[in-house]
Amino acid sequence: MPADDPNEYRSAMTDRTALLLGVDAVRRLEDARVLVIGLGGVGSWCAEALARTGIGRLTIVDHDLVAASNINRQAQAVSGTIGASKAEALAVRLREINPHANIDARLVRFTAESAGEFDLGAYDRVVDAIDSIDDKIALIAAAVRSNATLYTSMGAASRIDPTRVRIAPLSKTHGCPLARVVRRRLKMEGIPCEFLCVYSDEPATKGEEIERCEDDGGRRKRVNGSLVQVTAVFGFALAGLVVNGIAGRGSV
Image 1 (spheres, rainbow, N blue to C red):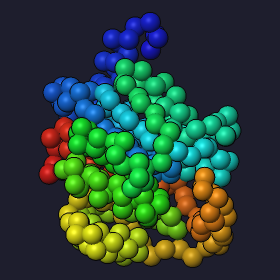
Image 2: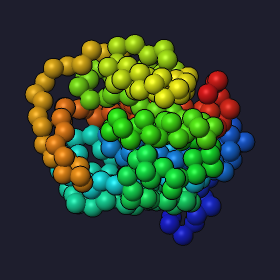
Image 3: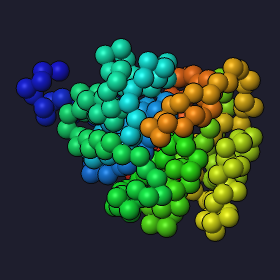
Image 4: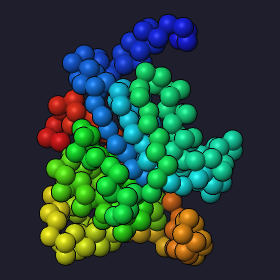
């Protein structure tokens, strides 16, 4: 599609979406404002799917840098982006896919302390793809308290079967250790667990587990194996919740 014909590009880009969801739905997607926090193996694919589907205003958030170990599962991770900001590298990719979208890349870690920097209620949908439990709890709590429509990802690591990915309210998940921990922590804070989440009911596969320093605080943490055929399905499922909800399809 010629780069100097933006209207033709835009029409062609959304053609298949409009055939399935309708022109009105495409317009709602173009008018929507969506926030994705956490741009790893789940969040990066969610953000890419949203850009390809025509979300008009997309804010993507991650404080981390691309590493070679990310290449096996993260959309923005290629040889040429190693050492770059995950958020900025993904923003470049998304703008090439959808040059009409407003892509806002924020290089910040969402924590209980930084939560005040985000007006979660201003977004049509908020996606949690954070892997830190404390930060995940902080985002969920802030989203629920601001009445934001939130979709969250549970544990995708140590799984090998993409057909075991499920969607349910957090209160009704089963077989996911991370979901149990998050649910318990939220109940202690008096936060209801009725928002939808993506999880796997597959028992974790035991592989090699190592400890290494992988965050900007210099702390060591456990690192488990993960595969793109699972993490991407998590991301696409989250994107499906966003798109179908905004388009008025289903009950989400």
